[in-house]
Image 1 (cartoon, rainbow, N blue to C red):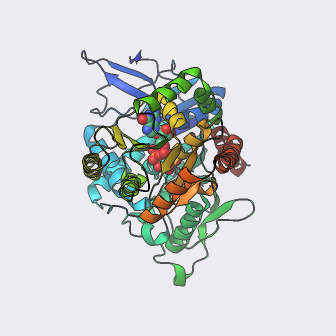
Image 2 (cartoon, protein in one colour; image 1 turned 180 degrees about the vertical axis):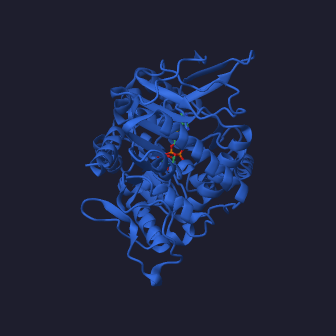
Image 3 (cartoon, rainbow, N blue to C red; image 1 turned 90 degrees about the vertical axis):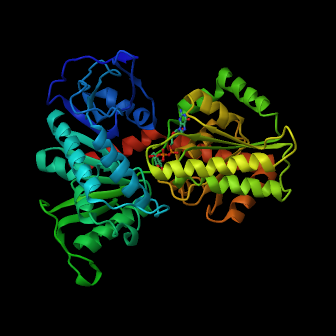
Length: 504
Ligand code: GDG
């Protein structure tokens, strides 16, 4: 681990490419002496952006993950980090984290954007914190971006940053990407601060969504709220003409022209995110991972069928649905508890948020009950782990599993589904996938399910297990081919090319 120090500031106006995300791509640990240490936390976004980050003077702006009284620890301005790119820490106090992150981001926006699976909370004080923190991020970005730099802002925590940044630095080329779904107008319009959020995003030159549905929903909302003319599906990509309302009282719920918006065109399009396919394939093929996969199966009693679920512990992921489906199949004698295991790995997430604590209790109750009721002594068909795993260990679980269960009630994309496919280097294995994950649009050869229908999930599990090896192989091969051609590097390149084209 690196130790933090009062390290040199990067020269301002140095960065021609700036990534702005809620989190820096690092894990921070504070030791007993109070010294702060950090190390890179490799993730999809880091590997996606690696070629762009390393190619030029680049900066990543985000929060370290450690709440602190502002200025209590020195800001990260550490040129040593990961080759040529620098980190800039946006320090957040404990109360800001509570209000902006756990509050507005994860108790208001997250549930609202995921179909109101749980009820969103609307509080003025968490909204005010969201505005304040977004301004912090915008100011840090304005400080370090070189003249005419390209800035890529990420996700629902920072939707106000594009317009704040444009006001501070009109010279910048600004892209915004939403990693989660953008909901239909009838849901989004519930948000008391709907106009401010939309205005915030429209500060960007290009707004990217996971799917065409997200792009379309956003155009619909801007048309209803502001009366702006738009086309979400034109041949050259979607667009919204900001500042020139083709006002139509009939379809506008509340016409209020945006402040500070001079007439200009914002591009709007779908850019489905992906994974680093080549590196996962390599990891899956390594003798260490192959051996570990065999050991995992042995440790689980060498079942004939191993089913797997891997998710952050989140109510959007439909963990309960798949556990219930599996339990019912055992109860119905459709599956044999002597030869079948479902392993659910749930990674701790947002543990301070009440709904997440409740979800964990519900899942653990379900797992506990199942353990008591299913199988003979010594048989434990439903296994559960509540912990994060190293990447290689996760890959070994993917390699070990015969069928992967990915059943979110709503998901922007779902990278776990893509990761499972990438690790199936011999084209074996089956994927059961929710229709409501963005990934379903790209992986139609999976067994697609409606996660709200237990019968649909049960049926898909049985079909995936019962089909011929040839059928499984044909489906998996088609999905692998698609992913190899659509990896995360292509995603980043396509977004950045489209962003550059808006400036020409
Ligand atoms: C959001 C959107 C969108 C999970 N457990 C472990 C672990 N993971 C990794 C997985 C995967 C990632 O976390 C989870 O990505 P998902 O896409 O499945 O879901 P979200 O976290 O909700 O992500 C989503 C995504 O953003 C990207 O745009 O696809 O729709 O909700 O990469 O592998 N990794 C390791 N150990 C674990 O225990 N190492």
